[in-house]
View 1 (cartoon, one colour):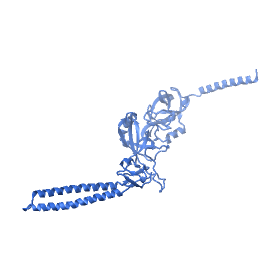
View 2 (view 1 turned 90 degrees about the vertical axis):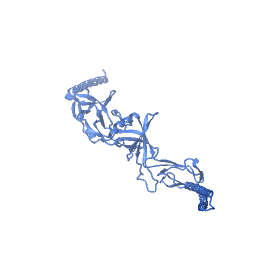
View 3 (view 1 turned 45 degrees about the horizontal axis):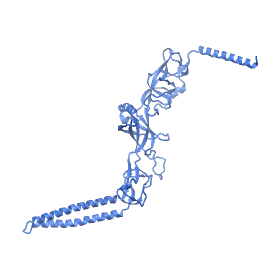
View 4 (view 1 turned 180 degrees about the vertical axis):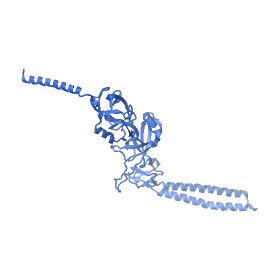
Length: 410
């Protein structure tokens, strides 16, 4: 027998003896030690996430109302404009000349009308004498009335000319941010030229998001008894992952369901104030932009009480989620549970547990249903998690209405 073979045999024998001693030690050590914690009620803010889009509350396509040469553009592209600000100045000469011609025509007709009134009055006076004739008076009255109608028609033409002259200054109908111009100075514009530029309002903004019919029904059942639209607030996550610092409110549910997606459109309003860090010489900058994609979080205003246990206590198999609780005679009992919206560290239990149940949270790898365990308080780390964790943080699963799988990322 070689030396190396002898060493191998001795090592094998030593391993067998060590394993036997370890098994004996485990048998003599008694029930496995576990850490337990009581299920207690805690407030959770219910939340559902959807993909949404920012939309301006007002949108105006600026078009020309008359045909004329464009003399001047008076706005800076991309700037914010006020209602009534002049955007384009069109050639005024032809419209001013037309207005003067129409006013002259009115003056001419008014002078003729004055003479007709005098003629009518003379004919009326002569009716009492032998030279008066009824037919002469009737003709004078008809001529006067005809001239009065002509004066009114001519005055209407004057008013129309004034309107067209005013249209040579194209003004902003709303407050908002203006886009790029489609035409430059020197071009002829007309109503058929199309959109000259577009203005979109900036504050507040709409946020629209589609919700599946199933989720919409669940939201209705959840929030209508609590106040409907007033029972929820809207929070936004921006495309770069930041949470928008201002909350909005839900104000509209569409009256029809999209057949191709089986969703219904919801809409809310949210403020869009200017950014504070911009300097005074900059154009006004705001966080939200028309047609921007965002993540919409629909949160309950009032937190809801749920039984809370550490997330690490929740196990799962093909049948769903379960936990081990401490039963009579310190025997481990398996309990099937249903989870609501939860945080990364705390699970909200909607069914399967009662307040005060002692849930096994540590030493789970050694626990078997029906076996006796040696319970003790959970570690300080677990207890601090239950004490200091943000209880009102909601799960971030989109939709998030059903039970949440154990261990899923919130």
